[in-house]
Length: 447
Image (cartoon, rainbow, N blue to C red; front, side):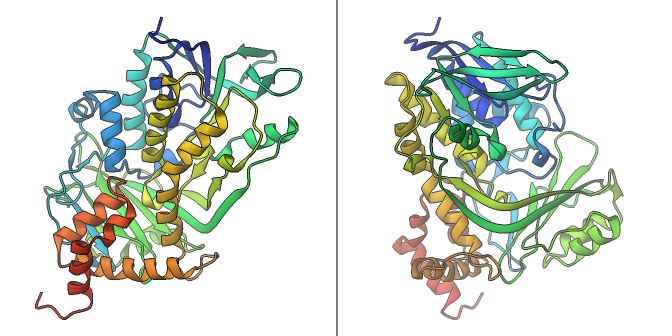
């Protein structure tokens, strides 16, 4: 029985990264933690139907890596033993802005270039070892059980995917981590509550991914080649070595506003050749393809404003992509949900979490990365949205900062720290960084 127990059973909807990280902290406060998922998750080592974006490049930012390692000590070493090759987020990754390589340097932040299935597998195996955590697999989640007045959630109704019977899982707390497709807004409406307002940024993004085997490693001692999309060069990519041996590489091409990387092999190669960085096309043009290109579309970033509701049923929480789904180009999603899990841990230390207070707490974790990604998206002329004076000034400065990274590794490190959620975005305006940006992007240099 956990020390400081506050309830008998908590049911977590969704056994992906958000659910796993939540289960880790919930297990300290509940006698039983049940993770419910439609997929057969516990034996999964590869791609899952419930995580369609898992086939494409994923990034775990520095803050997320630090939190996951702290929650599961030694998990990074386990992934390394399984063939993942960690390195420095700046010094070992070739970052490009507008076709110019950012000046590398030592950031001191660890990059763990594991695929989503590999990362999720190792975290899930750690969660499976927690004695009071169980997985209920192959279940469709039908809805919530509540008190007659709808004031309190008392459990979840589920059904086996191939069955007819409906089971009710009684729970002292229910947590929704089912992602962008969360049905909580619809359930709230059915119960007589207001749906949360939504902020949307339509970006029309698509990832198209293909895997290759190469005879000669194009990365050398580096981990990845990453030309970042910018308004001047909106096509981007992430090209990296897959864990293990065999010279296998993964290439995810990205395009916004309907300019999607094709899924036919010829079109895919032509898109890669159009990138402002020739290294990627040169590496794949004679490489052995291991599969056909596969596309994943992401129409819009969505933030559900649960923290602005005035009424909400007791004993129901929402976190992760179910609350805020970020543009995946900025790789913030897993890191933000890791931060939210720490907020959940802090609330559990005070007793049973209060939903509206919890939403207000995690909204503070969401604010900066949302402003970072949504504001950056508005730098692309075709993205619809209000461009305030602040947004225009920030994006103008960001363009100069990207230019300065080609000359100054300290500027690159500052950017990596902010993008990795180690420092707030405002840190990019600190006097020392500001002077470096001005020197390299405004004043003539000899470099």
